[in-house]
Length: 50
Image (cartoon, rainbow, N blue to C red; front, side):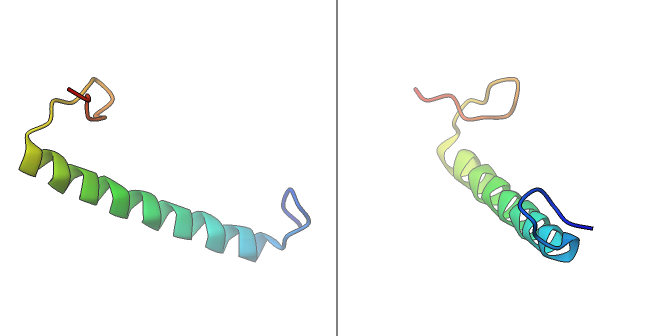
């Protein structure tokens, strides 16, 4: 079994897991940033630049 670019599935799984971890970290960071700054959020939870 191989992924899109001929990578073994195990490697793809590792990359996806790492990407998920990075996304979770950036969400936590963004949440802390928003709480500190009291930035308004849009419906999707993204900060609205003011």
